[in-house]
Image (cartoon, rainbow over all chains, first blue to last red; front, side, top):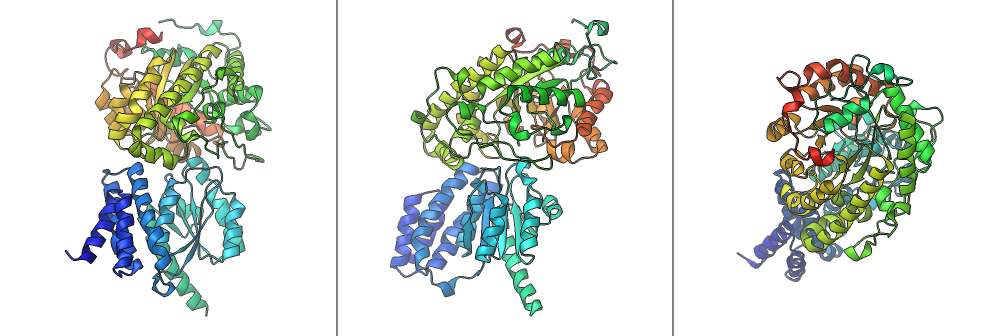
Length: 222
Length: 382
């Protein structure tokens, strides 16, 4: 195994086994030996996170494990991200993200945020228990392409149609992504969302799809 | 068993099922004791009010005023005819008594509403938990106590009065940052065990306070500690032992309600020693019945949003029949009834239980009924 391969393996496995120290060391090593930071993130840590997602699907990992993995990943991200050159970023997009009012369950939102961070989105995280008008304000202020709404309780997801309408009234071009434990793709459709993210990796796929739709719409408008 | 005489019931309630022998209260208490009853009850161990049951309800206020709380609970029962009334309606009572600041939302009308919550978490380690000496005076505990007494006055001896406490892990989630709690379960299980032991004490005390106030049964709610978040292994190691301590120590009839996917946990939950278990639609009830056998008393599992709030009367009826055919002993919503649910929907659930309860109840189609099913812990509880 070459030194480079060794570093990728350590990044990957460090995330999977939530060995924060190992990830930090490997991230430093990656910079030292000249691995492009974006490559280290995507082929190293993000690849590890993909395996974590599979383990979660197979019910070998649960939420505590997921959070530990994500913590390890962030430790590496903190080291690598400052070294990414703007022109290397594959996805150009910006997103407003938050858990809607009445809901403090932000674990899922934080995991999604991590995925957006990995993939190079500019993330405006509003946190949790976010008053509905905050989403509208932040979207207008930042001109973000996507607003991602999370609700983890059946009692709070009922607010989604309201906030979706509020956003659309102000900016009909903005794309809306919804997710959270009680939501299904049918519910998302009924609520008038553009996309539904089943889980973290699905959300990122959906967001990338929304970005390409946006580009097409902008082209068509021209 | 004692059969109430309909004539003797002063000011007989709408809620009284004329075709049946027992009062709602006798039915609920009877099934919890494992006695032979006329038909499965339709009741809840959790919030079961509709803001449509009363004019001029301000959802924000009902949590803070014993009279308003009791009146809404009573009015909902009067409109919807369930076999129980339950107070309180929110999940912050214990957390608040420990020092958490509850956020109540300004809301107007009955178009949308939000439950109160504790936004700022204040526990990071066991040391941060100070159980107040006079817990019964803290936060809204006196209000709930008063509401239990008032609602008992209002329903008389007709309707069962329930209250609830959170499971220790769930209470931890109310007072700690959830991600810290989750990570602690792997990183520092010893510390978490100390935290859970303290929170179990709080649950025990609060359950005792509500019992002394007159609650006929207590529901223990370990929501969020199931397999949607934790592995069954971790549940068994960290959550179940302290949950069992809590349930066993409650000197009242008790229901253990687990929402979320709990099929892999049913034996561990049963082992906690409650008089009955209840589940939501994410748990396979026929499977739970198969695992636990006929002795166990099981309630469930009407989806409170998809079916009860948004479903048609036909959906509700089908869901009740399906639950009965899966082997439940009582129809119960899978979670708190969403307070915007139309009374007519809740009543449709009650109606379907009245109509099909006896006929579709597996115990009635067998020889012997519930009497054959000696329940563990029955003597102790009664």
